[in-house]
Amino acid sequence: MTGGRGHRNAPNMVAESLSVLSAKDFANDVDVRWCPGCGDYSILAQMKKVLPEIGAPKEKIVFVSGIGCSSRFPYYLSTYGFHTIHGRAPAIATGLKIANPDLSVWVITGDGDGLSIGGNHLMHALRRNVDLKIILFNNRIYGLTKGQYSPTSKLGHKTKSTPFGSLDRPISALTLAIAAEATFVARTADRNPKHLTEVLRRAAAHKGAAFVEVYQDCVVFNKGEFDYSVDKDVKDETTVYIEHGKPLVFGKNRDKGIRLRGHEPEVVALADVGEDDLLFHDEKCPDTVLAHILSRMAQPLLPEPMGVLRAISEPTYEQQVVAQVEQTVRDFGPGDLNKLYNSGDTWTVK
Image 1 (cartoon, rainbow, N blue to C red):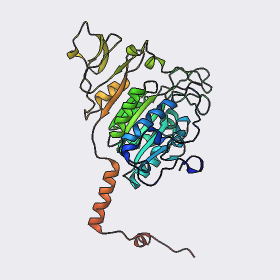
Image 2: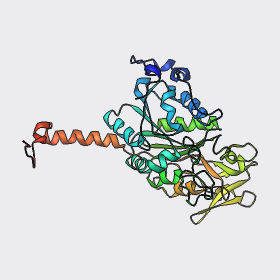
Image 3: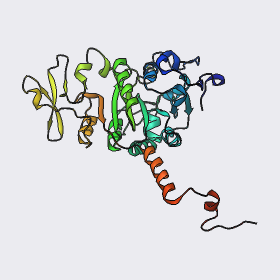
Image 4: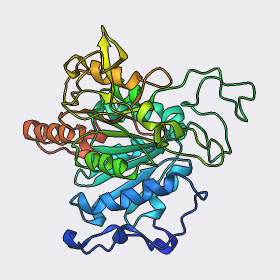
């Protein structure tokens, strides 16, 4: 469990008045050790703004991370935290949430940590609908280990481990989350702090598995990878900000939209079609087809969706585990551990 230097960022166990908590209350004196200009700084800053609003005292908030640049996150917050092993943060966070459902548990991971060695753990946490807030920093590179290609690197991307270009088709983090039927799926970017804050706020409020992909700039090994999505001169043409119940309209002059031709999205000019002909976003649709279509929209053919793709309500895994245990006790009475140990095929070794 991380606690900074001498556990200086471990919270005061006396519950604080939530009404007076601010971003400063979640800061500590641990030196933040990311490269100058790294997008992680923005995510950390916006997280500190959101945490006072979630309705939990600091001793009820836990950050769990794996391995990678993003996984330093727990050290830099005045909450409890676990810096765990590569890819296993969702599994450890699941156990933590089941053991203490009252905790607000956040998982911090990256595209390598979460989608390569940790892909299986991530998938199962999402499909089970464990009440975790999983924030995946996607910079399409392995930054901590000095610039190898990652599961989200583009086809043909040249790196230290793919000097002639990657042959792997990249994983879409959103598509994976939708396929696992995560109950909350969203995308935002480190260089859009207002939008980032709002998405984190919504993820925090969601009851169930909340998955947020954050486009994050690695200024050393993959600088400018997401400039197209945040640069003021082009972002209006390359992204579409989706809102529940509203048509997908984009463009610098708000003169383009997305229409479905069968199951295929296409760009149309609003001069040629009315807004009623466009695709209207429904984040509450229980079926995953619409969210899947949105998750597959990508540059350069289509604008990339930013915002909440899916937000539905389903029973959480830990609620069902607790209910099952309570029902079993009612049906069969309290367990006897000694009897269990000595049941079935047992033998004594002398």
